[in-house]
Length: 257
Image (cartoon, rainbow, N blue to C red; front, side, top):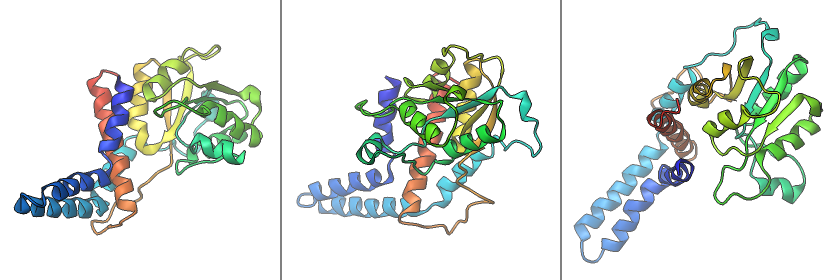
């Protein structure tokens, strides 16, 4: 139920949804309630302008990204058994099958950083976790696509475990712990996007994993500017920030963090 609810909520937090609802209401009421119709039209315009103002969501993302800093330079990597790589960086399944080649999205650093760690530190084992996180569940799982990517990048198959049934962060942690040969008491690096790290660390720690954060895919730098306004970047930033903040609070309420 939590998975289905999250998908329905994901639609409602899209900024264009905020514009669409009052706009449709305005059109429906235009003939009989002209005054209310005009008010709804102004509300739709206000929602559009707010969705393009990237300062507020960027501030939210900066708060999330600053929770878990990067590993200090010179950290002894021999203390870690492996790297848990969370899914979310692979483009949709039909792109892979239509063109028969790997396809990454704007969180690609989750995959490229994993390959870099594997090459620099031959003792590290990789554990990729990700199934099909869409409704309806169809197409290649993320684990299958990840194997195609890692194989193409030259990572030895023996160095990667795959978990392909999980649909969210909670299932990433719980199902990965059941893989044969995985010892959650050993020290693992947890590799995911920096803004997603607070929720991920909370979930994995609660599930009994001994994890150290390895954040990648940063979306903010020294601090957002109040005048940051974009018809394209603004709505995307709002959707990302709200998705992660609401997801974190929902996991807290459900006792998963």
